[in-house]
Length: 257
View (cartoon, rainbow, N blue to C red):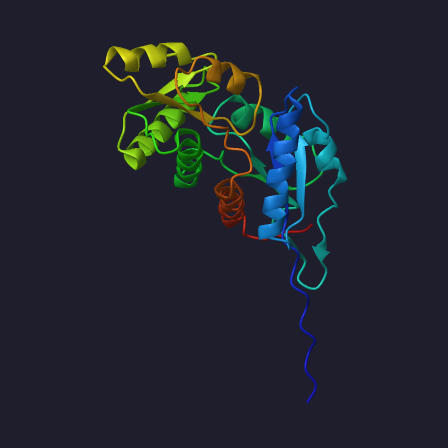
């Protein structure tokens, strides 16, 4: 009796890390380090990088290099996606809602868009570890969660949710402060905590990588300022979590015509 050969398993879709882009060279180094961590965790997944602006490769150029979807002539179906776009952004906002989908819509590659990284408990793990590294054996009495800021109310809600999760983890008050576009500003957040009697205030850096906003926010901190989230191991696990979640919503094969 002859047995039919087992067809090869389809390759997983590529994972495209979508970074904002920055003029600070440390930001690009950080994104590359994060991509390396993701590859180490899942060497079977092709990992690419695309930027919204300021740095190469830009997202449209990255999507243009992806191979076309391969059709299975035996079953007349196609794989679900060529790539899953994982924004290295910490909340919902214009980039997630408009810019990235608009770019993806013009690409020939079939793509799925993952949720932004935040809010999520893995982000809180990274924030907690960065704070502990900055404060050492002298814990603060309160924390400002310094974030970029956005005019989008969903983005503000997402950051507020992360502040609450971090507060529960630390057992301390955590107040969001924004570097732009939203209130309270970072200086206002520090002032509010001082007005409530807190004299040991630290800053949690709610930025994916070093850059202007992270640097300016730290200058307002009267105490220890944590490093940005960067290539923390929890960030790599979170990227893969968002990738897996997005794939789960695009599993149904599409019929070819």
